[in-house]
Image (cartoon, rainbow, N blue to C red; front, side, top):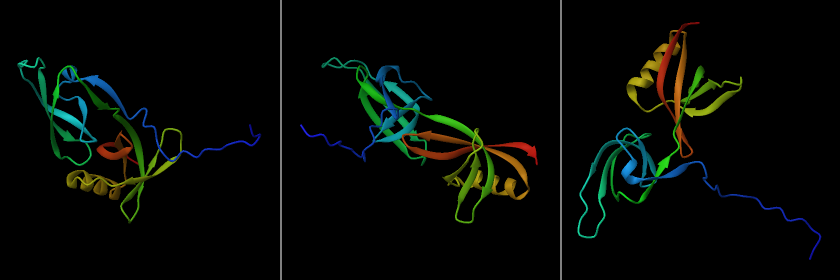
Amino acid sequence: MSDEEHHFESKADAGASKTFPQQAGTIRKNGYLVIKGRPCKVVEVSTSKTGKHGHAKCHFVAIDIFNGKKLEDIVPSSHNCDVPDVNRTDYQLIDISEDGFVSLLTDNGNTKDDLRLPTDESLLTQIKDGFAEGKDLVVSVMSAMGEEQICALKDIGPK
């Protein structure tokens, strides 16, 4: 045995809290689901009867919560599906930089400067117009599976 200490640098992320398993038959409309590695919101669920091999199947139609693409998946209802851990956090908008990033104020007083403006046109114009008018704006940031995006806007009055 040697007396030297070994230091390991972890370059991989275990991803422990990004998803959790849930039985496919218990996932309902407006729930969340991972399809093809993307976090999605379920918009339609239909369940087929048990066939000659004994498994009822769930057909999910879902929309990616970050890019809005429609995805579909068919899973036996007794099997487990990955469900993303989706969080919504409200931050106060401090500044919008010229390169499309926003500066947000967190609850503990720090700033968060790593988020881009949303790609949704109506939300983007609401944020830009409200900020230009000098309103106090609070943005809702949705985060799931290591991605974050501004998804809603609240006006809390003039400064």
